[in-house]
Image 1 (cartoon, rainbow, N blue to C red):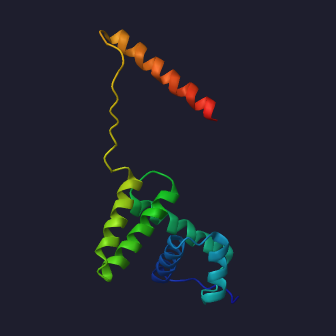
Image 2 (image 1 turned 90 degrees about the horizontal axis):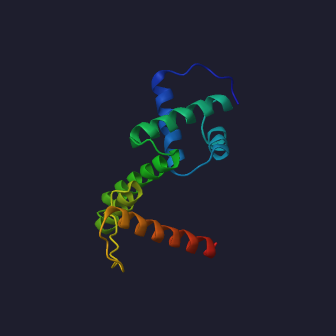
Length: 147
């Protein structure tokens, strides 16, 4: 690898964007290191590549505007790439599926309502709390039996 020279701000930003794209494709650290060393002429150290990755991950979090794990942010970025690709070829059915997946990932889909008839007459707050506690314990016990 050639000796490192100081890169200008625009070059650094382009490299971070490139690393960002590699991360959204699902490449891991070792794969990115190999890619940069074999397929680019950047001539940078492993620690500099790690810094680019750190900044790309930071950008992902900022773009995702969520405070969840980095994996959710990566998934959102991947949905965006998939959507743009599907939209560019006018594949609107795929666009809709991608949007539905994104909505589900973010928890924006409507919760499913489960209606169940109560087999007991509730006459007070205390009776309701006792009933809920009994049902909760039944479900908890059922879960332990299935484990």
